[in-house]
Figure 1: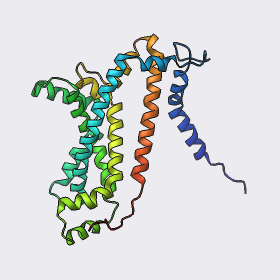
Figure 2: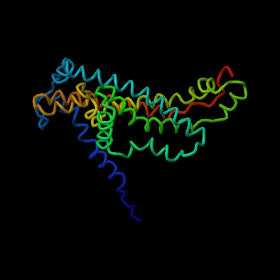
Figure 3: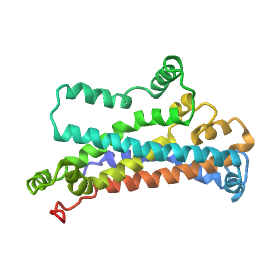
Figure 4: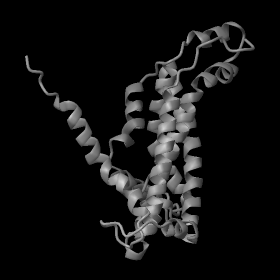
Length: 267
């Protein structure tokens, strides 16, 4: 009997090429010694990367993005951990609607959420637009991602370890630090890295809430108006692509990594 050809692997390969092919061309054109990203390539050069390193506006926007991303990752992970513990450890009245409200930023379009936050910040509270408002908006966006990662982690280890800690005389605070937090640490690190990446790459909310202090994505999009700045933009985009990919892959490895549920020392 003639074996039937399976189109699924071919479809998967073509889909990946269609999805990631244009992205993989970005680093290729960043090394091209030409102003425009076209074939054939003119030659190999590192001028765009040298220009990127010595651009003061780029360095300033990078510092702004790093400050916001670090703060957002810490705050989002703290809120996400508390929310995840509340959902996985307790049954609260109205838990479904509360969960739906926390997860709402995942389904609301970014531009709608950004405009709503802009109206609240400026029209309701009359708060000036700064990096603080950008960070607050990013926290709202990152908490659901952090919560999902940490919920998966907190539900993945034996809860009897926490009960054993209480039976041995530890209070709730010390049980958290000596039992729960070490076991949840891979999820915490994964949440930090995921939130950092989301905040660093987010453009729409930063555009509406940043004021005069531009972040790196705003700087990147602003450079596309000038053809002579395209090579540096390609170099910057390639760098962001590589760094973001490394962070996301590393966070996923940490999220999937299992931790032996052995009895913690000192109990």
